[in-house]
Image (cartoon, rainbow, N blue to C red; front, side):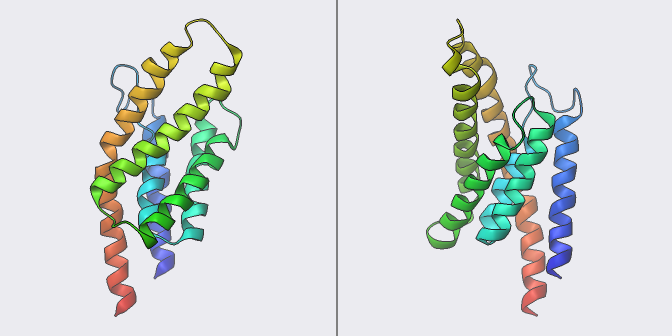
Length: 167
């Protein structure tokens, strides 16, 4: 049955990727949420370290395919965030929707600041701070806003298969 759970997670990841890359869908003021990253955060809250690392890396690599960035940039960032989130949820924190909101916000903040640093700030372009305020922060907020919905879906899948595994 774990294979079925991971097939559902994978289908959900592909669905999120398709939805986030569909032109004009979920777009507000020209900004779209990064659903794959939000899903990676939610899955990392419920699964083990190794599986969270792999799933988060795959979500990041899908994000890399649709972004104009070095391939693997977002994959590496989400891999590290997924491992950290998984460890925090295993040893310290409960899996609550509020924690998913916090984790997604922090993961997107780390990604956004690294993206800003490596692609804009180090080159010293004039007016580069507008990119942070007009692009990165609204995307962060929009992604964090949709995270609780994905959290509820992941929680339902996890609980469904946890009951089956115990029986």
